[in-house]
Length: 411
Image (tube, rainbow, N blue to C red; front, side, top):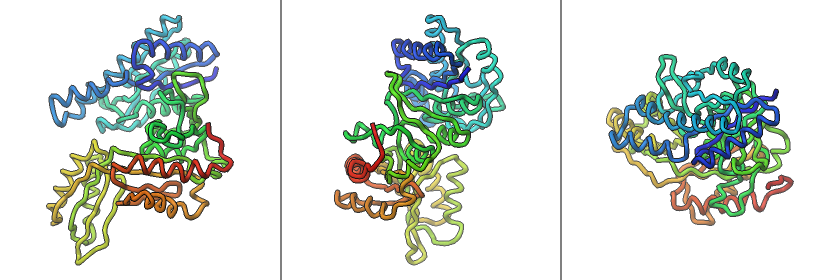
């Protein structure tokens, strides 16, 4: 029998009526002759509510205890989905991350999966049951509950699909697929029928909220076919698959933007070997992921170093930067939370010259200043003032997608 892994996001299980709808979708897959494993997020808003409770008690809650609290949201959701399925005559069993178990490292609040023991899941599948697994969570080898960070249920789903060698991993969400830009900002954004793992990883890392980057990494590494689709209809969504030649016809596949970053600048840093290493090692030791880095040209033996981090890490990153600045004799540390990162992504950029120049020209015409630039083979990102983010996204979408569609078909 084919094996399908289905993941349902928080909006898909946001209330009892939606949970009933999810149960009907699962039943339809079972009735079609499939074995089904379901990964569920917490009900929409529940994770934020639980995080809020921990922060009412502490400005910096202990990460282990925070994971203990936050992980309960998924436990509630999987139990409700199992009950809904049983009411439809489908035998089902719910399992938390530690019951599976999904083994992670011990970095609380953003743990990484190390291995998955699939024996218990396979046993239940062989008994004819639908297995419903709590997303977003796992357990350390020492027995402590962990969570995988925002969007972690996607990672749970694709990792389980890889471990179980599933035929497909269906990611059900509140949007019908991956779009060329955020439809709430760009009226003419199109749904992309097929996108490569590489493009999707870039878009996810650059602000596209449809998929979490680590989940796409799992998909690429283990060849998991991922189908992103709406939980509110039966339409085809977006398939995330291996790269093919057709994908290079479109220079830019999508425009992403990210508002949840902060820029931290260490001012007047002594320009000598080892200084940058000291700063970024200190950040790495605290599991702070740094995105864009800019070091100015040295002037009279001093330079400035700027870097961006997720806003959730900004307080800690700023504190670390100040400690290092004092050690190395830097003048001060500045922080800017009113920035945005806007990016263009596309496999076609590998073989088409002039893409960066065109991007900068489009932004210049709109009077948008660029503070930092980051590139790879298939993406160009710029750091700009937050207030210009939507204007930049709309302008770039018009220039690179609406006016240059070529042979690529969108929906």
